[in-house]
Structure formats: structure tokens, C-alpha cells
Length: 66
Image 1 (cartoon, rainbow, N blue to C red):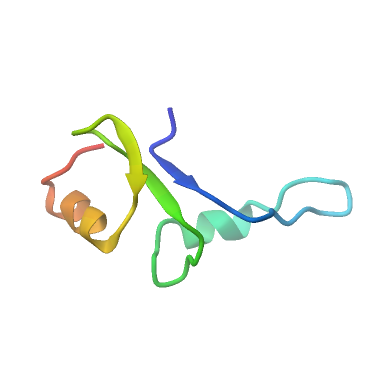
Image 2: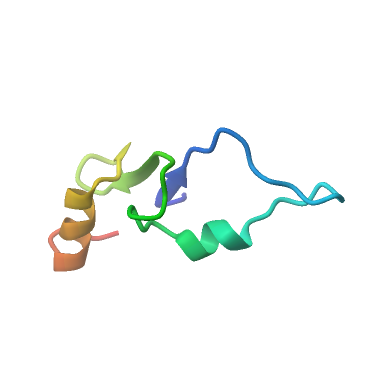
């Protein structure tokens, strides 16, 4: 089950209809770069919730585990 989900309006594709995923991977979950909504699977509620800067702080501090 994915821990993070990023909702895109549309995904870029190549001329051979392959998805352009490299740039998405580089951006990761950096909210200063990513402008699309990101959701994460909160282990406390076992539900997908919006991923916010507070969520990142919880993960970084170890107060939330994936």
C-alpha cells in the first residue's frame, strides 16, 4: 500500500506514451516545490489525509512512523 499519494491534474508523457516520472521522484514530498495535493497514510488513523508541514514535522521528529 503506498504511503504517499500525489494527485495530478495530468501527467506528462513521452512521444511513446511513457509516463515522465523522474521529475516527480526528484520533487518527492518537498512542499516548497510540489504544488499538487499530497496525501499520506496516517498510521494513527489508518486513513489517507492531506500531507502538511505539520505531518512532515511529525515524521521528522519520530512522533509518527510509516
